[in-house]
Length: 113
Length: 116
Image (cartoon, rainbow over all chains, first blue to last red; front, side, top):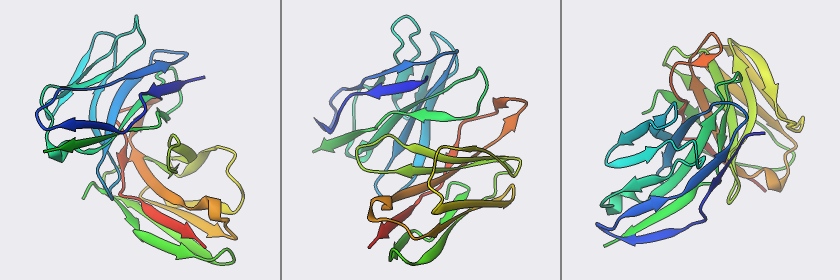
């Protein structure tokens, strides 16, 4: 079956530090990959996505590249801000049929001044 | 405002109560979902509705009963819940064409449920 594994949190960084949140996946088909972000007290918002191998998704300074050879979709940002503090979820959608997102457990990011 | 509205935002209920969670989307989507979010666990998909028809029930206990009267509204009826059912319940919607998603899911802000 499909599954997503994310690094355990919380990740605590100083403002302007470089961010990497690791995500690896297992899928039976050719999935699309997503990163969602959840700010405190809110639902999940789509941050970025990639639909095929070697695609790079990007938004708000965040990037992730779909690496089929390593089954990974690591999230990166060059310089984090306090406002980036949130929980980040990696997810996949199996494009072989079925319309379901499979999520990882989420990684909490805390950015301090 | 994401286009998916959930009410109430917070709910405290006793184990013998009956309550309902409501979700409404104004995006023209044709699929809706209920997820359960508990601390330190992956989001759990509970129910899926495509074109108002329930297409998935992920072994959810019968004390949770979904209802989808039209493609814009989704309810989750709750009765005789247990304390371990306390969680954030998230509604999402998407648009499906053929067997493919046109875009990702849009989530509501959730209902924080506490069972006492």
